[in-house]
Length: 151
Image (cartoon, rainbow, N blue to C red; front, top):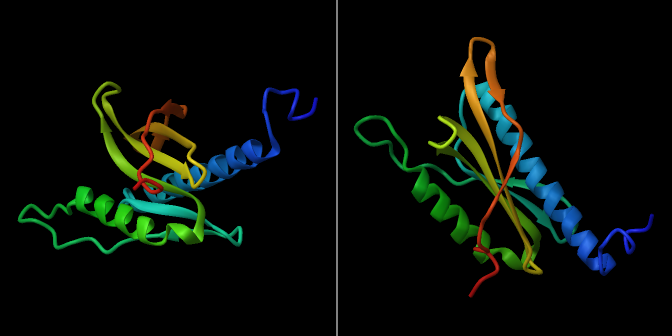
């Protein structure tokens, strides 16, 4: 079955979808690895450059507060700003962060990928810590609004 008959209307859309899947999948997988190896991770991005290379982008966390917590919200804002400034160099980006999922009673990995042509794809992976590391639930689709290629 060709991609055309599978419901895709043009090769550009299927390439866009592949680029979103690749960028988001790389981000979510990287976050899972960081959790298993380090017990946590700071927000980061995966970019798909115009040359086809995937790269990780991180920002420096601010000073911890009196309880030792870093402002992850500020890090996400800094990431968005950095990516918006360099967006002409990217075909797609995925921003990944550690989130609280009260409806699951756990934490989760949230990833949101955005393509320069306007498509957005997002997912969460709930997880719980255990004696032998982390247990990850199945990935679930999520919603997200464009944030990089907006003016």
